[in-house]
Amino acid sequence: MAEVSAHLDMYEPVFTIGVVARKLDISVQTVRLYQDEGLVLPHRTESGHRLYSLHDLDRLQCIRRMITEYGMNLQGIKRMFSLSPCWKIKDGPLDDCKTCPAYFEVAGPCWSLPVVGDKCKDADCRNCKVYRLKLDCSRMKKLLFGNEAPGTQGED
Image (cartoon, rainbow, N blue to C red):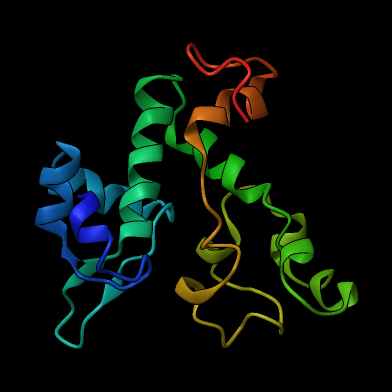
């Protein structure tokens, strides 16, 4: 994958759902489930096919790790993603954000909510700084539980 990533934009949607499922050793249905839960946003072609970027692939790998290594469920992951302070990450006045359901909602990440504030209503969430945050799963346990995952002590 390193060879491919050296020549691709991290956010360019090029992988089909079948390729993603094979690379992650999961079923296509599982990838669709993660999408349906709002954990990943594939690009849709005009014909409706899903395409994923390297960023999406990294996000899906992190989700799998949270489930398999940390014992989290999908609702827990959605709540964790909902804690991203989009109002601090995105530019603009805080008052605009205080009218958005994502400011108060903890059911899922801002990009998965059916209604958002004026600042984001016409935005493409795949291009948003909040969706594009790099997930560091090796540090996720420390962030969530206050202790390190095995083998990560002292890493920055």
